Figure 1 (cartoon, rainbow, N blue to C red):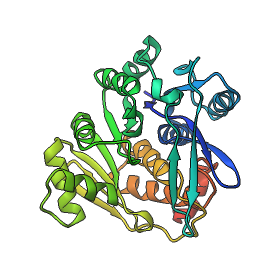
Figure 2: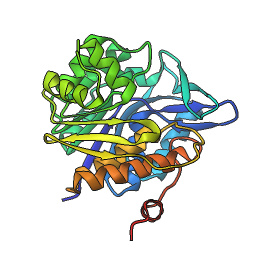
Figure 3: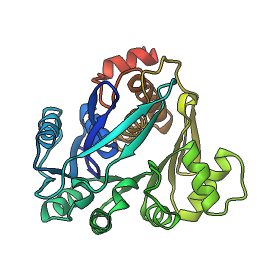
Length: 295
């Protein structure tokens, strides 16, 4: 039976100094999973405006259902100002409040989650009580809960992160996030692997992944560690690279692929996205295989 995924959270426009691109971490994950053949739905909210309609068109053209994207009569579609440093790393200015702060746990949204094999969510969408409460409602009926931490200061607290981690079956961090949250929770450890184990025990989570930028990633999966050391590329910008990494990893793991092959594939996909502008460049499975030099 085909794997079905629901993604909950922000859809928006990333506004760069010279151009703008459609984004939002849950949407980026969903779009990439759809491009890899996974049946994907996005639960979000846009405004009654031109850029909201652009997002709807873009999402449906890329094979993701828009049935659970709600239209808000009062709040505008989200926009985020993106600044890139000389290495292509991004910093964000995120407007508030916008339509995706007001996502409701509608009957449609509940049906999407109930009929999906997994639900992907992050921390940013919890900055407003409305979307936060809706997420908690939907998590109650999710079969497998994937927490893409994706910290965006100042929109999180220690208490929120602890709550979401304790609800999750799978947690994805970058290395900075892992150390920050481990420190929050009183970890005495200094190594990446020890802190992964510390989080696993604190939150009763068997599946944890940590990305390390250009140095690849580490996956803890059913008490085993899997490593990839990264791929050498020239970075255009890092926007969405982690989202595509997660999409690649989940697509492989949820369809029964070996964890080592899954993390290799995910790191290659993330690297390919970082070579391109914006979060959602078109990348075919053939391009990924060629990049990895798989015969």
